[in-house]
Image (cartoon, rainbow, N blue to C red):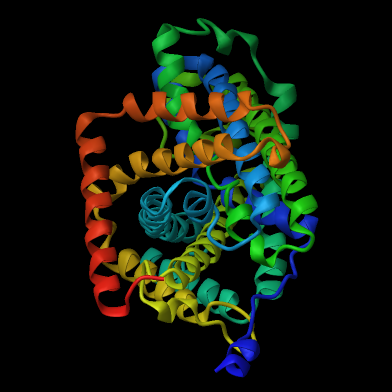
Length: 422
């Protein structure tokens, strides 16, 4: 029995700093910048740029906490693992379950968004067929190994960044200062609401911590990767937001489902509209790829502790990936793509992901002084930001999140009744 355990394959530590940054950017740069900026402009006017910076700061606090924790506990599962080790099993399980609910529901939406965007420039088959094809392709890429998935992710992120940089460079000379007046027509309340909306445009940096077991020199690599990822996202988002408002104004952004497309069409740079549409499609592919990566590793971590069936802890002997978790993740996202995401779960996931990051901050506060890289003020500010945004959500959203959490504990009880605790 002991020999068999020794021969059990382990995950492959193959991700370098460049790969880890790519995973973080691939997880962050998606629908947030291409879609949510328009919604935020509608609630705050040009001052949504301030909301963007506030959201970026809260995301940075949370990200630094994730980095500090992952440097000491470089295992798959991220906050799920930290909750178990530093807090208690209930909070650890809560973090893992809420991550799965949030990311699975979001993945279905992202897959459908990709099909709709890509069909505009490549009208082959139907948007649904393109969405299904993307899910199958990215599931296969994840299955054949972390190195290949990492290489594909870097290519996707590179194209997305190039498309946004092209938009920024094209738009800078066309900025009209008059579009920034009045700057804050809805006051502080509008800015606060835009910050809550835009916070979700930054979520994804924790994906680096979730993959910690596959990162080379995690104690050094993960903190650097998180800092680079968040700093890049804040700078890029701010530049895009300033250009977008300056070129078309907040009202026109708010009236569009694809505000960056509005900006591209208002400019005269060659093929800019096509490049931005392709960039949006690539961004959604990147988010979807990272969702499959993160969800399958969370399934692995939860299977190890028998919070989910232990079959999820299996690692492929040749590819060195959690293949059962990858296949199930792909199947669930396919079902959501074909049948449509459940609106109730999608709304409630907003609350669950804020609780997930709250647990991250609490775990960072519980770390002994010898393990802390950053000031204790950082998790305090991160926790305060998360709780403020969570409490600002509609009561129905909070209630839905609590119902989903209760359902998770019922599932955990059933799994442990069959397989026992570990």
